[in-house]
Length: 179
Image (tube, helix red, strand yellow):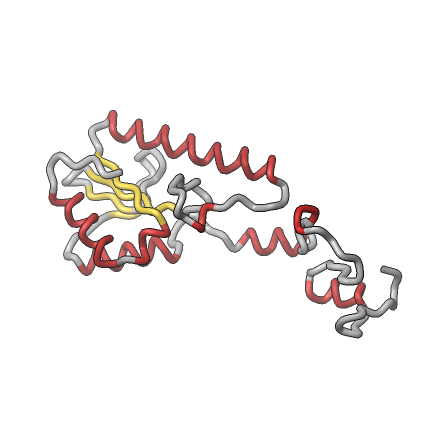
């Protein structure tokens, strides 16, 4: 859109509005859903993605509070263990990973949080698959070293009582392998 041209819906200067908000959408041209791309500028997308962290996430904090309320004590993110598990129970030789369904490719067909993005599909498929393979390798190394591994998925945090029972049975059972 040329400088100064007004958006038909809002009446705002489309170019300046895009610069102000970080959204660059020309609403005057219809686009099929299959052809839509990222509506954020590269700088705005970079800013948004930089806010995503690998530890102390909301799902992890929920699990930590729950485990603490169950009376278990743990260490966090031990760097000397493969994959830096989220919760480490050294005396029990057990670890818990709290995985985001999107980032770690939750394979449950009912999980709505694990959907692939619609844009840059090739990039995201490769990145998320490498995350999944790295997770499998870390779990294998931990198991070979005598650790038992439990993976908790972000979508499982909706049912806290079931989650508490899973955690309790994993930590109390001498032979549990998690899932």
